[in-house]
Length: 321
Image 1 (cartoon, rainbow, N blue to C red):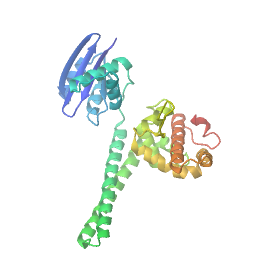
Image 2 (cartoon, rainbow, N blue to C red):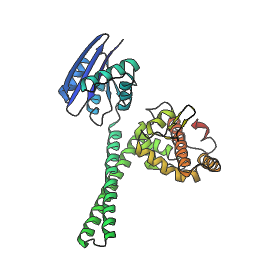
Image 3 (cartoon, helix red, strand yellow):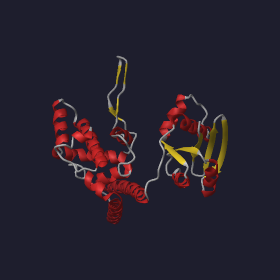
Image 4 (cartoon, one colour):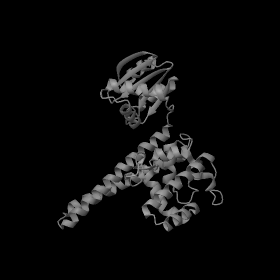
């Protein structure tokens, strides 16, 4: 049985639990370079497991990986379910570290590898653009509310318009930088994905970023689950038959983009058009059909990303399954 270190990550501290056979050792270090060095000394020949807790795990992971230490980064929900399955009642940082270590020892999770600098930058820029989008919508909504009152001062109208214009320009600036970095990192792969009718450049960039050029996933079902397009069935026995829906626990940004792509794909993408007509004949609601088309697009993108072929109507659907 190999050595495992479970790390409960927070902004200021790193609570650890070192398991080696029947031996167990708990420790606490600071979430700084000094703390990273102490963990690296303990982790020689061990697997270090931690949760993907916001941005706080990244510095430690990026420090350990170049030192030849195996790292696994696990979805916090997985650890939560593992804890519940084992009927754990205590909730402390020390206990959480032990739970993470036990999960790593039992399930031997997939090893983590760092994204490229460009990929990380693109992800951060996308997050900033989402925030700008939210601020723009809020300002426009505020202006509309004031206008409807019939008492919006001319100075305030001018200032609100100025703020919206400024934020729009900032978003455009960030968007251009995203395209520049994406072309550097995934240029040819982006061209391959945009050969699929219905998928635009923005969606192709995001797909390459979250999959690191389609290297992080071995099967399209893994990517579907990661994004949150997997169907969830709520049924038990003969009396409980809930309404089915998708599992929205993944990446909301790319889910939204693929859903928007489905609006175009139902007309210009042969496989998607045939799916649309088939489901429409069965009386399926428009939203359900578009989610199904978005799933189809995702499968096509995965197949193209893995094979590095251009899309073709004649074989495009065959390579998706």
